[in-house]
Image (cartoon, rainbow, N blue to C red; front, top):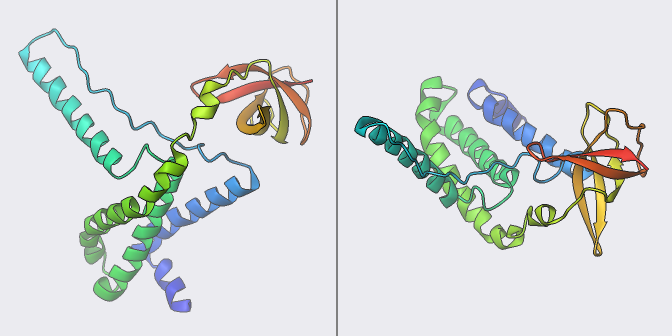
Length: 218
């Protein structure tokens, strides 16, 4: 155990250890309700349609950039990014890279930065393959992830405060709809009364780009 700890905090492995620690902190926050499963979700759908009417050279450059973006999006999609919550895939990827980095640098690198850099790309590729294998069975479980919130019109509905918000800090609330309980990110209106846990609030406004709902005390 002490040897594992020594390898984990070794300079050549410390970045992966730090990222793994952040992932662990995230999942603890999800369990206690401080963060939502989709808090750090990223949209990996890339629109590669380009409409340029300037000249041939510009068209070629634009098409090249679009093709590159499309290839990247296709690669990410192949490894299941966009099919599952981002942090599910990212956590498994980082855990795989952490394990491979520890093993590779222990048996091959012996703390050498040169070896660590040479191992970086193979570790990333192998970890992506492992991540795809481990996450593929989870896709059916998350096929409707995020769709429930988008189909609901929240404005005017009541929510129960789970994590009290302020005018500057995001909290969380629960909305009951047809027997289901949906959890959303909430923030207090500028002139709203302070809220505490289990208070009832009314949803007044939505900040779509941040996926936050402004609420006021009932």
